[in-house]
Image (cartoon, rainbow over all chains, first blue to last red; front, side, top):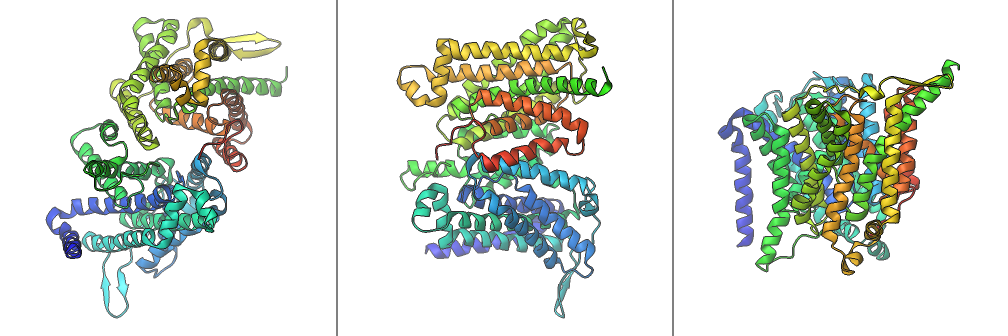
Length: 325
Length: 292
């Protein structure tokens, strides 16, 4: 019975995603794509921050590697397929994480966070200064967006926003599902163990630094995917997207949604995007609206929306409340 | 005196002045983290607010000295209001709530400043008494920067006396090391928190008021100072005022000489320095290890 309900919900979600462009028109379809990109970006940080407690406050580096990877792959290699570009972005994010991992998995707590802030500042400066590679503040733009090609079977034009929407939903949906699957494997349990008590996990015979490194690389790779989708979506990737502020935003989204829960970052990024869109539309003071909204939300839900949900559920005696991180 | 020496000395004075300002902000951050375990990301916002208050008071009264006295007090009062009505309801609900709340307050301050004073630079002239240069041993020193250094030293001495020679200072130091125990001994910890938060913000306010005539007042002031102050606190270690003082001076000098010699790398020098320190001293130079 419960399984049937679950399947029905999934089907409704699928149909809803297919119908979004038909119902809301192209403007809101694009809005939804950027929301989905932010959701994947936030989720990739949630895996590190919420599940494993790697305090990564420089996630925009990996986002940037993904964006530059995809944009440069399309600009430099003729005949690059679109999925290849996304893969390049994923590899870019993963590679940077691999390079940094020996260092960052051995420091914990605040040192890790500040180290990331420093690395992010370095990365941002490099992105600004290495103009031949990154285009600096102007960024890389105007690279060709190739059609989605399965040789001999199908070729879909990706410059059409409607087609791109379906492509983005597919790629981002699969990324989301992969990350969900990752947290549900036995390794996912080790991640949570490392978050709650790394000494004990070590004592049980698991290798804590190596496990943290793996989580770090997975998080970096999916940040790379979101970065490459962002580059494809905008047909532009500039150094702005790698600034420290862009690292902080997904952390905030994750925290507002509920850190350490899978649905939290999705709710958080949806909430942020909607509030920002409304503020932009009806007022001139986006910052003020965002700040006030954050204060009000956090006074009523100190652990984010999912924390509030769990607390309410716990009050009715059904589930334990969210662990404090 | 030859120009090279003159350059060294004048850059040194610039560096010292900036280091002192940095210390005033960072000491507040450090106090609040050490005692309340709150990362006050709005701290630099208050610093900027105080600079705007100073501008406003000068515009109303024309008296810089009055502004220098009143603006930090007004800012500190705003900080106390924030602690009492926003942070106190969140106590005990974890780090995340505090973080998001302070970000929200920082955004609000940023936006309010733009609403009230606009985005344009607000120039503020130095008081007539402190304009010009001092001539000493064949060199020129800008008067105002010397005044800033002196002001910071005075504030520092007052703070040191307050912390180490009075009963309230003793309580504050005890609360930094274990606030639950102090609470159990019958000290009104919530009231103390409001007081310390106010003092921390007041320190940032003094820095903001003092820096207003050097830099013109503009909305981007908070971001730069906030980053620098947090780097100082991380490198020095949480809750260590002595460490914060030394690191601030070091960074101030590093900044001014860096601009002179390696201008390309100067904005990054602090980050590089911090990265190296964090790798070898994860708890900062003077910090105690965090409880896990």
